[in-house]
Length: 106
Ligand SMILES: N=c1c2ncn([C@@H]3O[C@H](COP(=O)(O)OP(=O)(O)OP(=O)(O)O)[C@@H](O)[C@H]3O)c2ncn1[C@@H]1O[C@H](COP(=O)(O)O)[C@@H](O)[C@H]1O
Image 1 (cartoon, protein in one colour):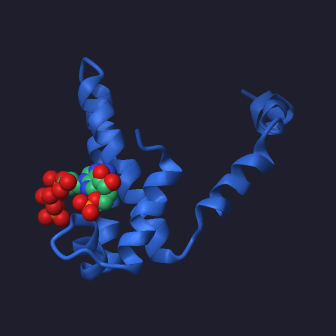
Image 2 (image 1 turned 90 degrees about the vertical axis):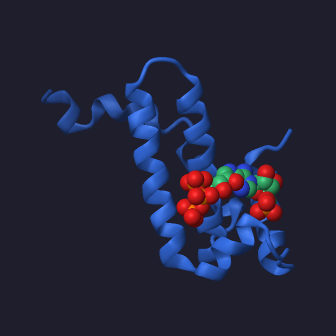
């Protein structure tokens, strides 16, 4: 079983030591524009899958999107720890959203 952090490390390893013929290597070779196109494409596929009945397509497309976002982070040099730190900063802080003026006016 591969968690997100392990997958990130695997992708980073592919960038450091390219494995010819691997899809990840193909993305890094093509570069940022290609990776961004894939993130956009996979995002659209998640949206369409979410509108369709059943979970399997949504699960499949979400896994594709997560993978491509991780490739993007590695390509841009953003570490997994940076994402974890950002999420940790939010922990317990988002519950006060109801006190925001724009929410009160709803
Ligand atoms: N999690 C993934 C993963 N998710 C999706 N994909 C690839 O993403 C692509 C998405 O399919 P598409 O039809 O949209 O794209 P495509 O037609 O193949 O490619 P394009 O011509 O559109 O670029 C498929 O080729 C999938 O194989 C992934 N490729 C690799 N991984 C993991 O990445 C790690 C490294 O794998 P390698 O790159 O194979 O070494 C391994 O742990 C893999 O499990």
